[in-house]
Length: 321
Image 1 (cartoon, one colour):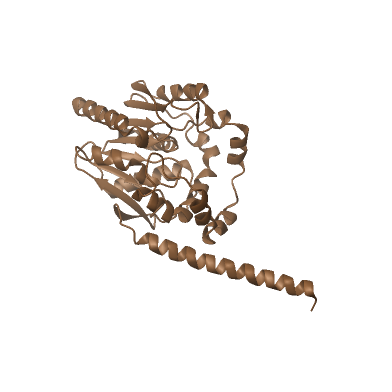
Image 2: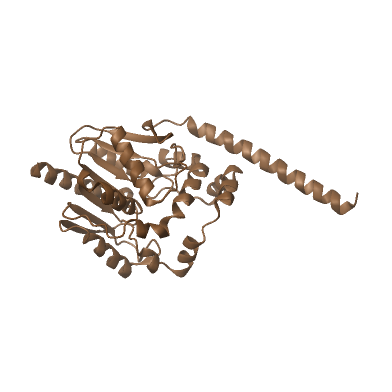
């Protein structure tokens, strides 16, 4: 046996040992995460558990849809708590995010929208709904409108994504979106603890929250699990344009909240972001457009702006009834 062969054996053995130990630690970390306080309850949708947070009572339901991130329902915590004082509210974690089980179905716009519709149906939520959607959640909302328009009473888009925004990204962001890592590599990074380790060293806290905030604790605890679904969703973003092609809101009441604090939003120059957001405001013949001096997460930085918009929508719908 040559010295070189012995070195190779040692390297292979060491690598396998490290991966095994890392995987064991990762499983232990997820076990600890599962013991954190539960915000809501689990419901079964298409043979997998979805974590749903319901608060308040009332016949004008407000449904919160999160964007493309790993924090799920938690970005709506402050807003939901305030709105729940006067009506029924529901937020949730999409399949694979935080406490929700992953789904075997592709994470495209249509499947994600139908998953939400099944959640509302399973919980017997009173129709029609007010949908409050952030970022990519705005695209999912358009898929929901495409198939269930009659069940939506009002829409509030919070710095929503636009199906054509990829064309306005900086080249490096465009390339990153087009070349997301293969799923096998993503799973290896997650199961081996690399994602958790990277997040520990370089991860950022949720916008406008303290490091000790329970939202950061939970996001960091479930990060490796959520990351897999985050990438799975990302792989379908470029095709979502075709899924919502031709969809408009008719005369459904629409409020568009757009961020203008920074010179760039999601890597898009503000002047171009204004063009895209103005187009979103034209999705309904009954719309209102508000520019907010905040970053992308308006619901975290200026929650009262979102709360006021929801209250206005609720009041108008009640008056119409």
